[in-house]
Amino acid sequence: MAHNKISTSRENNLLNKEEVKSWFKLYSLPKSENYTQLAQIAAEDRRLAGLEEWRRESLPLRLAK
Image 1 (cartoon, one colour):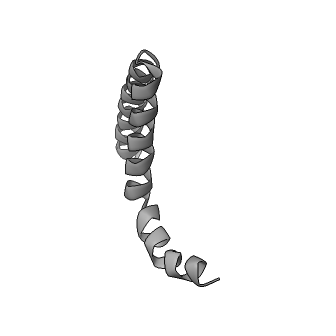
Image 2: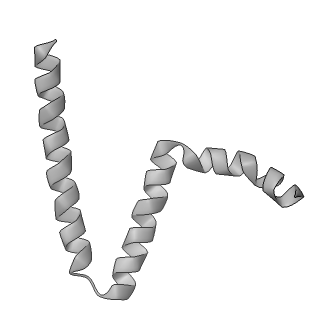
């Protein structure tokens, strides 16, 4: 059990470092490119979280109101 926690912690640290690097890269881009990159990241995050599927399913309900 302890090994799994250590492994997960190491993976999280690696992901956090990569995420920080990507944010620094975004902030160094011109504003128009920065916005496009942020929009793409947000869309990918929603897709990975399964929120896009939920949005598609609820869209007809919102249009019907």
